[in-house]
Length: 168
Image (tube, rainbow, N blue to C red; front, side, top):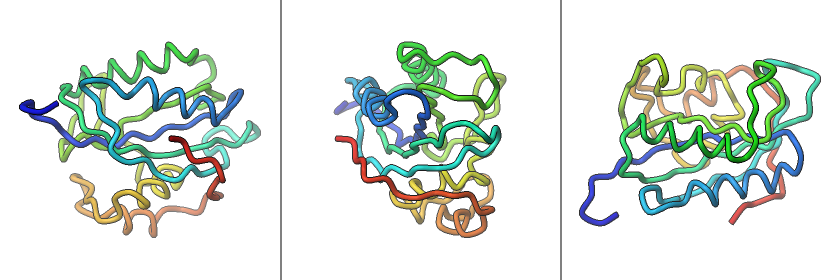
């Protein structure tokens, strides 16, 4: 990607269907491309479902990438990976093979019909904030100007525990 302008983005990945570890690894493998470079990956956390209780616990992580893609191109890439991995949006907030959300795209604030960045609910989701705090505790939310560490400390309690699984 030398010579091209790139942005740092943070993605939240989650899976609670099938072989969760393999799903996270496959998503990482599919993300890595000439225009998206994986920089760092967080530890993996096992987390209780938030919006629809009674389903299997999730494995969640955050990945820091650099990309030359524009935000909508990046969104299309992420949605394409979800589709390729069999993601079906049947039950809102229901079980999923893979869920990939764009949490931050540089310091951009984007509000469109298709994409909202920072992700609109990341501030209340410990399953995003815990792994994000491992990678970028001092990163400032461009909307609230609070650090990820501060947001994590203020988030309502949700069961999150580190997993032994670490993708490569």
